[in-house]
Each structure stands twice: as structure tokens, then as C-alpha cells.
Length: 416
Ligand SMILES: CC(=O)N[C@H]1[C@@H](OP(=O)(O)OP(=O)(O)OC[C@H]2O[C@@H](n3ccc(=O)[nH]c3=O)[C@H](O)[C@@H]2O)O[C@H](CO)[C@@H](O)[C@@H]1O
Ligand SMILES: C=C(OP(=O)(O)O)C(=O)O
Image (tube, rainbow, N blue to C red):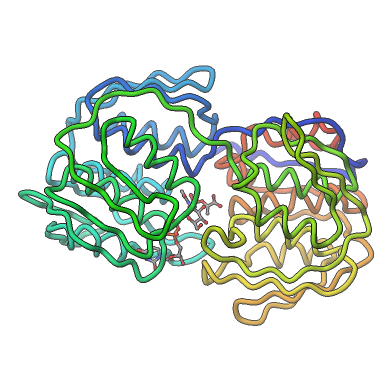
């Protein structure tokens, strides 16, 4: 692996406009869902990300022919395998999303167990409970999960937690099931709606996506379609925070305002001015913003994927913030790195108490995961001197050319 890093220097207030890319967390399940059809799929606004390349590699392993150019991905699949090996699944947890489609299509899937990662142990019990309820036999052994079903039958499935991945995987597994499947306490994230819209265009009969109850009526087959994915609300949120904490004035283009309401609400609460314009959201920052209390929750609550970035912002807020992480049990790996930059943060269980300091100082730090890395970039923009961020391959998983987009806004950042 090539060891690249970001050097970030204290930057002037960010100015200009930035175009948000397609949503990583929509694209990944949608590419997996392409396995459900043998027709041609054309996907638009596909972000050029490491994770997207991993998912493309995975569906190619199953027999897909892919053509990915200029944010357009063409897929044609004649499935030749039911097994996803460890080498491919270990690169990205979202790889496990191929289980539902392969099981639905072939009645048999063998997928390597995804491991935990820096943000938590991340079990897959809810995915498996869903497949079992639909009639699949599940066996686990030698690091693999194997699911087999003569046929899947629609049933009622209650999720103990509104898991995004489990909702998506079960929704995909159920598209060809006999009868009607109802997922209760389903995740309501915009990416679930995007996936349902994509499947419905292909001929699926899914209702209720975006609410806590999703109804899937089984159909016989799905056809090829063209689909444009939604913009990435977390990338949008990250640039909104960058504009806010540098005291900048930035137009965020290609954002669905409803998807970032929880972020707008928090930024507004601490003193940032956000207005809707015909081309996007204008964020006008101030360097004198107030501390905030934040609790991460499933959508429409405050997204856990924005927790680290908001914490970076709160390190220099006026007052003390309490940030509670309820979605993942261990998503505070960025705290020690922010502390290396002078932040005053104390962790108590799932809460972080952040006492605003006068300023941060640049230091050598490392990205421990994707959003932790984004948080360090944000901190670097306001820290005195130079910040050197290692392990930025995590950042490349989920941000398209982050440094170039920031540079266009006047940030001092480069990749070495
Ligand atoms: C590719 C993708 O879309 N990733 C997103 C997705 O991850 P992902 O789909 O993995 O997240 P989930 O919503 O499934 O996980 C939420 C919580 O549920 C737990 N859980 C999940 C499944 C399960 O079978 N059992 C179980 O206990 C997890 O450990 C976690 O504590 O939603 C998360 C929550 O918004 C986001 O942070 C991720 O960016
Ligand atoms: C946690 C994230 O992604 P993943 O679920 O792919 O690890 C994220 O996007 O912040």
C-alpha cells in the first residue's frame, strides 16, 4: 500500500462553492442490488471512491461486466458464483450486502463474515435473522456464512434496532419471495429510499421505504434500468462544518436539503447562518460559535457519520459540549488524535465532554477510520501551524478528492 498523507495548514475562511458527489452509502447497496437483474443497469453520479471500486471488484467476481467512466457505471451480470471470498469482503464491511441479492437470485449464497472495525464490533445477527425468517437455512463455519433456501416466503420481520444494512439486505432478499414481506422497525435513512426507488424502477413492489414499516411484495424478475444516485449527505455535512468552523462563506451544491436537516439544525443552534439558495445551501460561518449537545441517532436523528466532524468543530467552541454516541459502541477513536492537537475532551462511556479551548495546534496524527480522518482534516484547517495526517486511505474510502475540493475553497492542504 502506498503511504500517502495530508498536510493541512491553518487556512483562511473558506470561500466559493463545492459540488457534492453521489452518496457512498447509496451507491454500495445499489451496486449490490444490480445482482438481482440480468438486464443492463446504468448508474449515474457514481463517486470515484475506493469503496465503490471494491464493490465493483466484488460484483465482477460474481460475473458482472462493468464499465465505469465519468461517474457513469454500466453493469451487465450473468451470475457465475455464489461465494464471496474473504480477500474481497475483508476490504469493506458493506460487501456483506451481496448476500441478500445472491440468495434471492440463486437460493444459495456463501459470504465471508465481515469483521469488526475501528468503530465497533458490528455484528450481522439482524441480517441473518431476517434471512432465516424468510425461510433460509443459515450455517456459519470457517469464517463464512452460508444461506440456502428452496424458496423464500414473505413474512413479518421485526428488527430489534433499525439497522441500515439489515434493512437493505432483507429488502433485497425479499424481492422475489412468495407473498408479502413486512420489515418493522426498519431503518429510515435516505439511502434506504434510494435503494427502494432503484428496485421499484427495476420492477420490484416496495412501499413504505423512508418510514419504519416497509412492505415488499415478491415479483418474478427485475429488469435493467438507469438510475442517478442521491447526493452524499455526509460529504455535504462535512463541507458545511468546514465552512462553518473557518468562518467561511460557502455554497454547497448538489445537496438535498431535507437530508441534512439534523445538521442544519445543530449548526444553526450554535450560531452558523445557513440559507437555501436556488443552487444549494449557503453556509456562513463565524469563529465565535457556541458549544452544543449532540446525540447521534438513526435517521432522522443526528447521523453518527457526522459525530467526529462535529466534535472537531466543538473543540474550539465557546463553552462545553456533550456528545453522546448511541449508534456504535466505540466510535471515539478520533478523540486521542484531537487531543494531540490540543483539544480538551473527556470520554465517559458513550459520552464525550468537549471543553472548548482557545485554539488547536498542528501535530502529526493518524486517521483511524473514515470520519475520524475527516475530523482531523477539519481540525487541521483551524489549528496553528501544520497538521500531518497519516493513513488517509481511510478518507479516500468515502470522500472524492477531498483535498482538491477544499483547495478550491482556499484551504491549504496537500497530499504527499
Ligand atoms: C455502507 C453504509 O451504509 N454504512 C452506514 C451504515 O452502516 P451499517 O449498515 O453497518 O450500520 P447499521 O445501521 O447496521 O448499524 C447500527 C448499529 O446496529 C448494530 N447492528 C447492526 C446490524 C446487525 O445485524 N446487528 C447489530 O447489532 C451495529 O453494530 C451498530 O451498532 O449505517 C451506519 C449507521 O447510520 C453508518 O454509520 C454507516 O456509514
Ligand atoms: C461507517 C461508515 O461506513 P462503513 O459502514 O462503510 O464502514 C461511514 O461511512 O462513516
